[in-house]
Length: 113
Image 1 (cartoon, rainbow, N blue to C red):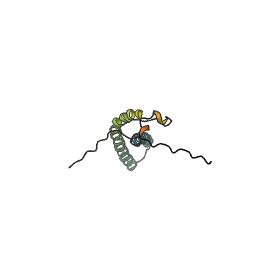
Image 2 (image 1 turned 90 degrees about the vertical axis):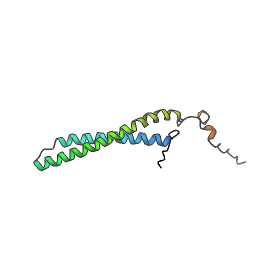
Image 3 (image 1 turned 180 degrees about the horizontal axis):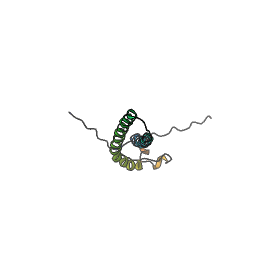
Image 4 (image 1 turned 60 degrees about the horizontal axis):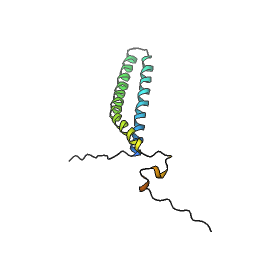
């Protein structure tokens, strides 16, 4: 039996992880494209050309994988944008936070009298 987990609302950790993963995909994509540009400059004999061709195919395959992953992350990025707007900002006062009622009260300072 297949059980599908449903998320009521993404947590701050989920949002952060999606954003980091999307950023890594973009960085790796840029690195792959730069590698292809450098590989294009390689000249040589038939063995070198065959190795270059195999490398280009492999890099293109990885770039395709990154593109597919980014497409899967894109809807989550738009969800995380709207969900992050609902999260309290780091500098927000506890009273302005929608989660303030659930937070435990701070212990009162005891004077050394």
